[in-house]
Length: 239
Image (cartoon, rainbow, N blue to C red; front, side):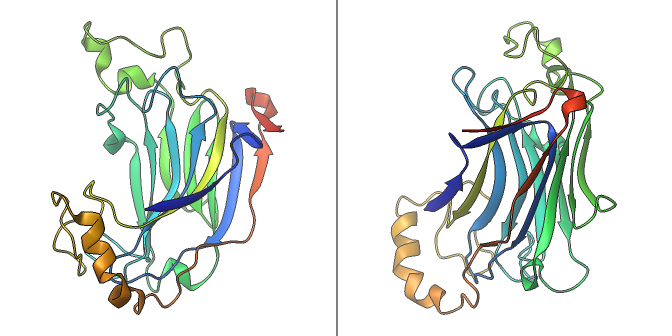
């Protein structure tokens, strides 16, 4: 289950800086990921992940004891590839964990700096980089597909920063559950398994008990600031 707030049809950006002060929820023991992310204006053609996706923040609401990282951690990730499931995001993902406490204890600024030469995310200050991706080769080469003549290049004729050379819109997503492995089976009191045919019902049946542990069930957004990098051909569009 998920709900999200999106700027599609209202505002978009291509290269520049984005700042998002937000506080993530505390949701135990089986929380959702919270995801401010950027998706392209048009993904047909090409389809995801050839369209690209920029996940500025992905965080679980579990406590800090959760093996994969809870509300004390977040990850930034770029998704890209010629087709699903060929998406080598593991080459462009990094996780940050606080030294103490949870990121949900107060507002933090999650930033993205995006140019044709580099993309990086940070928390609170640009000195605290989380994910840094220098663009010194094409993503086609980075993925190793240039050595496979049987795969068509969806970014043929575009610059090295393709697919991150187009306008993207912003999404704030709050999701519960999932069967893609983001919440590993057996961890944190998870009440369903990824291979179950009744995963949704299993979660729903346990919801009254789980909801009692949600001491701060809110994704709070203070503001969103986007600045334009005109020197790199960037744009911020409003409709």
